[in-house]
Length: 71
Image 1 (tube, rainbow, N blue to C red):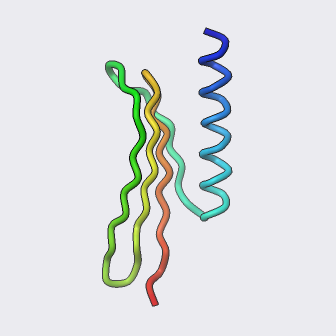
Image 2: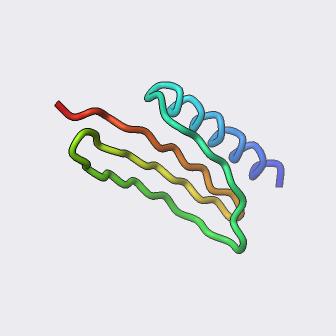
């Protein structure tokens, strides 16, 4: 149990560091159920590219979203 708490704390801090580095938005939210996995999404719009990184560990989802301007 202690290892899980330490791991989630480290992932949360890492997400905040990434969010700070790319000037992004970080959200940490609970999940109803249990899930393990990671996601990277890149959506291109006319004026910007939106990136999303999401990590889910059991009952916690950590999401970082940021935009890169095009051109």
